[in-house]
Length: 61
Image (cartoon, rainbow, N blue to C red; front, side, top):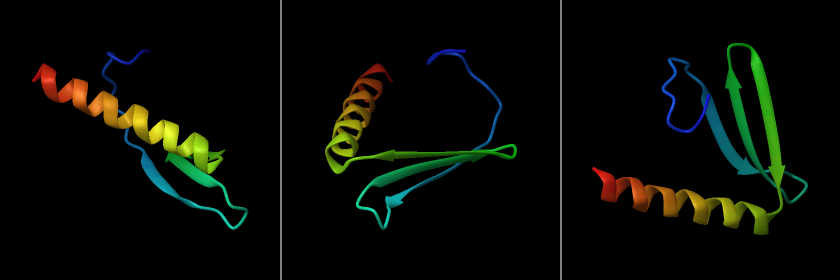
């Protein structure tokens, strides 16, 4: 499976700060829970990548 492969899977996504000063991206799907913790700097880099991808996707349509 890759970026351009469509799948029919639903997932819940939560993003927020932890009490340890990290940013957690939490994904839950079909009984699997994936908590991913990032430093604030890492989280900002991820946010920049998401913004860039959204801009590129917007230009495709």
